[in-house]
Length: 279
Image (tube, rainbow, N blue to C red; front, side):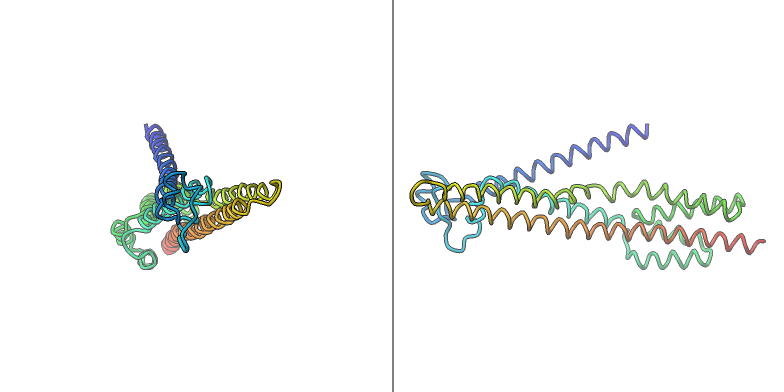
């Protein structure tokens, strides 16, 4: 039953992720076509309306029109950029929620203090107040502490059981924290590759202008080089943002995992001291 619910949840989450990705690409196309490609962004607006954007020349300093001239790869790059932004906001809220309602450092300090003093009930109450993935995992270990204490296990048996409980609790929380991180890491490479593809297509157009018989078509040559550079810049920008956000969230997840491990070690050491004092 639990496996069926987990599978249904995974399928639903995968479908939602696919919808978000498709929506970002679609919105990127709309922005490129109707906002960047608006006739008002180009000098010869009448020619734009009659013959399309290809006939227009960007107004001086109008970067929307300049980016539009990057060609058909630009909507894909805009979609990738939107995906980075959307999934970054999503990960920010999820990881912030996993940290709990209060300051994580203060929470860990209170937990360490309660555990060192043997106030397990107070530590559990602190976890209930904090909430979040870290507090849930630590609470599971504290409850296991009380169980092994009641059963009277020796310190080594208790250590193994508490560590196992922490590992199981962490394994349940980690998939939620790491979800969509693979998408961000993929966008690091995808942004660069899409930008490179746009660069190649732009250079093909530029060299095509040079290869024409007679005087090279300077307009086509300039458009080809412009397309190449615009795609390069957009792809690098997308990849750079994806790298920054991926490393930021990875660091936050590592901090949460370390906090759980740190609390688990404190619980085990507290139990060992307690058993040692009884002996």
